Structures are given as structure tokens and as C-alpha cells.
Length: 450
Image (cartoon, rainbow, N blue to C red; front, side, top):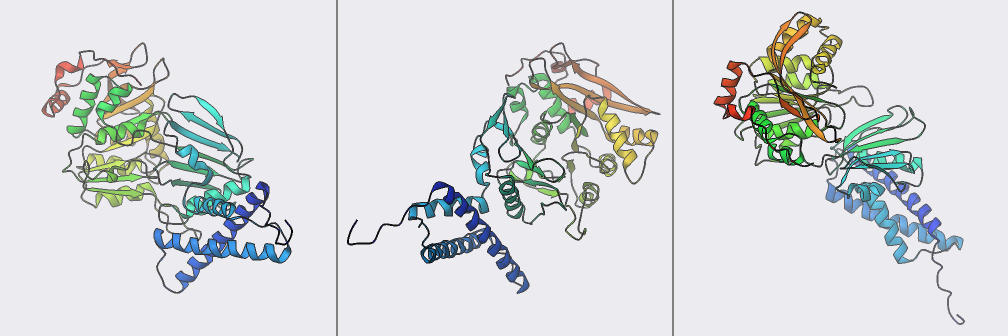
């Protein structure tokens, strides 16, 4: 083209990626500095809307600075379309889940596992693993993504570096993210998703977790205010079953939920549970101050006039205040625990009690458990590889080093629970008063389809 200016050259895709990284780093750094200035001036943190306006302003300034630099150096220019792509990528990284968004948008996925930026595996609802495309250009970029997520969720910023090499948080869609670095060869993160956040007993039947008769029995247990611990292995559906149990709790009751990390979400359904206080354990800050564990939260929760206390998962010393809550008037309380069998639940409870500050003996633990827990419900896998309830135990008493229990439902030939030992007459009376038809316990019901 003679007699005029040559049109600016469009930047190559490789340089576009580099520009995105540079602008993102600059905007994130300036955003952090601006937040620090506001804090030093005694101003409150910006809300989401104001933060987006600030990011938009910083983006415009940084892209403008890149244009001026390119002109001064005679470097390739970036056209408007590329600038828009870069700006959107930076916004996605700062406000969303970046390159993970495409995987999180797939509602059929249950697990997303990243073993380094370019080694990505996902598991769908059928339990099938498959490999996916990279979620970041480098492990360093993956670390930046995790840090961005940590700074933009749950109302507080969390560290993720060699001094604090693990991070546990809830994503905006309710998924749980756990990331580690420095202790493994590459940065790794795992995202667990709950596909059935509003589970009910009917939903458990439809999914094939239990049959209609067992569902009726379990619902009566909840309505009769029996204290229940749900056991099972990793990723077998304990939280989903706990939500289904909670669905049977009358709306008039006040609930206090206590979790290591938010997963239950009962407070998000004001129609079903209008009176809920949801509490989450908190890790210490950089100075090692401010940490609150689940055991302490259980003690706090008992002072909040709950009708029932729900502990998302028993992981350690909270077993003692939880059992105390169950045996001191908060009947109908619920919790989950990792255990490979229904009888193994008692072993895990004793192990946690022995490691607690109280250092309870096995005999003392068993007495405590027997006076607190009414039923243990266990989940496993049937012969077709589907999640099912395979055992229900009624806790009877403690006898020294043993918990005495009746296995009311036991695993059948296909791994699914079938009626076994009859309930004690007094327990059956309690459940009948809560609406249970005793005949349903002995009548086989059709199973749903997973």
C-alpha cells in the first residue's frame, strides 16, 4: 500500500498468550496493591461489583500501556479483537475458574483431577475415567489460577505456597477443590462435585441407593429423632445420603451444621430449612492465629439452641463433643465418617477418641458411643459397581471392648441391603410412632436404577 501508513501487524498467537500472562500478572499485582492501600486507609474491601469496575479500569490502563510500548519499540501491534480476547481471559482468571470453567460446566462430571497442568483426568457419573486437555500453559500458571481462586472465594484470602502447600476451598458452584504443591512432583488439584445437592429419600430410591422399604425405614429413623452416623468409603455418596436424611427433618426445627469445609448447603434452601446456622472450621492465618477446629465448633454450636446438630464428617477429636451433643438432649443429630464396614464405624470412632486431647480408653469410648448413637448406616458398592446402602446397625449397648449392635439390614448376594435382625420392640415402637409401617420392613421393594 503506497501513499499511506502500513496497517499494524496482528500479534501471533504465541505472543497473544504471553500478553495475556503479562497483563494478568500486572493487573493482579496492582489489584492486590490497591486492596492494601484501601485497608491501610481504613476503607472496607470492595464488593464484587466494585472489584469488577476496578479490574476493568486496570485492564484498560495495562492494555494502553502495552500499545504505547509497542509503538515506542516498533513492535507488532495488537488489534481490537485480540485485546478483547486478552481482556476476557484475564477477567476469567480473576473472577472465574479460568481454564477449569469448561470442565466445571459439564454437569456429568463428578471428579476433576489435575496432576500437573497438562495431565488432566475426569470421572463421569458412570465411574469412567478419561483424559482431558490441559487446563493451564504451565504449572506456574496453574499455581496462579489456584491462588486466584483462593483470593476470590469464601470471603477471605488463603495462602498457597511452599510454606502452606495445601489448599482446601469451595468453588462458587459448590464444588470442593483441594490442591497441593511442593510435597509432590507437580502441582496437583482435585475437584469433587456433588451432583445431587437437593437429595431426598425418593431420589435415593430412584438412583438405586436403597429400595422403597429401606427408604421408609430410614425416613422414620430421622423423624423419630434417632442419632445416626453414616459410614462408607471415599466418594461413595455419604454427603448425598446425609442431605436426603436432612430432607426428612421438619422445617420448624433449628439446625446447626458443622463442617471442615462447606458441602452440605442446608442453609441454601430456606424453604426446607429456614432456621440454619452453617459453620466451617478455619485454618490459622499466616501468624498461626485464629484457627478453629470442628471440635470447638461443636461446643459453640451447642450454645446456639439447636434442635439438631449435624457434623458433615467426623475426622478427629470432634467425636467426643459430638457424642456428648447426641446424648445430652440433641437427639436426631447426624454425621458421617469414613469406614469400610458398618462395624468398622465403631473402630474409627474409638480411634479418633483415643487420639483426642481427652485420650479416652476403648471402654470409655464404647460407653460414650453406646449412649449417644442409635443407628449406623453404611454405604458400599453392589456387584454392578453402583453406590448402595448395604448395612444398617442398631446400637444396643457397650460390653467392655465391644459395641453390641444388631445388623437390621445386611448386604445381600448382590451387595444391596436386605432385612436381617429384627429391631428391638422399644425401637420399633418409636419408629411406628413416627409413621413407620412395621410390615414394610419385611416386604421386599423394587430398587431404582442408578
